[in-house]
Image (cartoon, rainbow, N blue to C red; front, side):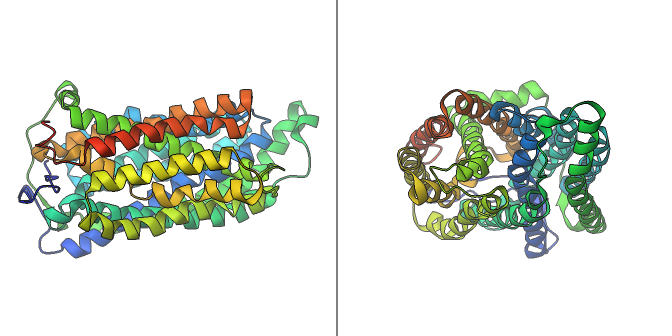
Length: 435
């Protein structure tokens, strides 16, 4: 299987690869891909709501609570390359179905996790769920790049990410009502043995009901995709070994971009994971858990608005310069939040979502310029780099335990400073940087 993600920053765009065609239904298929972005974005953002719930029930430290993100994003590192191999063998549409069914299985695993009353079982369910999301994302990112004119690939991927952000805006709000709205009045630290296990099982049923509903929706979407699996005409590409795929890291631009995906996802997830507890602090907004959870959509909603704006800006401005400007604004907002209190501290942290908006699609497309028929391999490598969401939040959590939540913001700030440098480096075309 091959796709072409062209060098869209040059004055003469490279024509799209003819190895993938849409049977005249490119607009229809774009809607399907937008729906995938909405689904996996929304489900991923529910982690921000589950973390304070599980933190309270299992009396976890910040570092231990961040294991939710570690279990979830570890799947990207383990599954991405196998997912790229599945794409080459089964095609994009069939692989999307495999991913959706794997996501369904992960949702259903919350049932035995709740019955067991064990934190590790929730981590296992999240890993399976994230494995399905990884497969779907390996499909969606390169596919949207070729379903349209090569010259607008940056803009189109950013527009698709706006639907991802729509999901991350809607899901946490509903999840806060369903999950955080039922936080127990009993302190689990006062229970032990069978009483504690029973209490945890009862309190996690709201989580189970939420994910059963998601499982039903995912099955419906999988069925719809299966019946439309022949809408895409695909020409198989020569098989490549994992070692051949990793040879792409010898290209400075690609490897720098993959590092920035690692740091961006890590930084974004670390901030999103801490928002509820951050806003609950007396020296910030002093909100209750449910009310703080309802503020999470402002973070992700800013990303949604920013992506629609960014889809236009990336048509008229250098993508590298836009990326560098956005990263510099995030660093400024982190510094403001860490060094102020009250509403200024809280809302400056929430405002970061607006500038996060264009980062993932822009880093992805800048790193992937010129990969041609190796685009599926490149997508697999880049999706592996999403494991940053497993590592950076854990480091941030340890820092919060040692020095407090405000001081912990220095960890994502360092991540965004590296991204700023990549944006400046990639302001020129891939050929100018001598891949």
